[in-house]
Length: 166
Image (cartoon, rainbow, N blue to C red; front, side, top):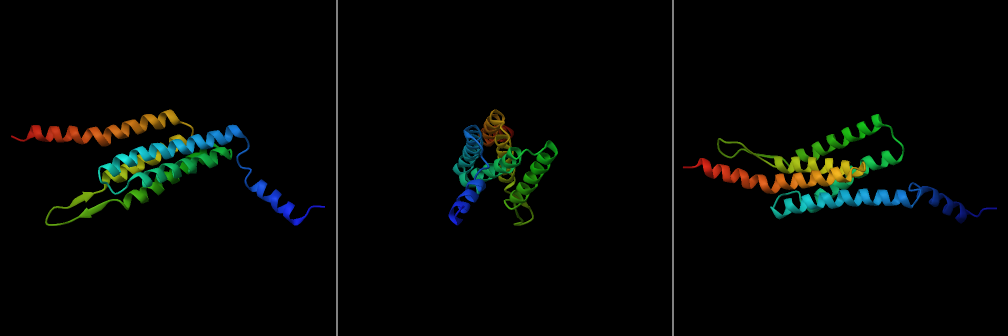
């Protein structure tokens, strides 16, 4: 006859049985760590430039996006269900991004701030989705391209603006 604590132990084992084997544990760990690391790289660049969304924000966005697609994928969801999950992630990040955009209306000229931060968070979520789906190489290449856009494009724009001045 089972005692009450044996039933509790068996129930706890069943609750934590969503990762079936070492291979699946490795897959989950690599995907989530990859998403967090790549998000952290983008976040470090933004934080280094003094922007509002930094390392922790980018890491959490990438990790959350990866988790949102990883769990249904491991549960055996079909492509149409995954499509809806990804749509939800994109919409949710849109709300987060909207919170980073500020409109300053000092004087006669309106100035919008935070669009690049919002776009960066959107990109970070996409990188997290790629990592969560097991597309780590795509996530790495996308991170490199985003870093180039964040780092190199401002230099090019400044150089072009200086060329336009007499």
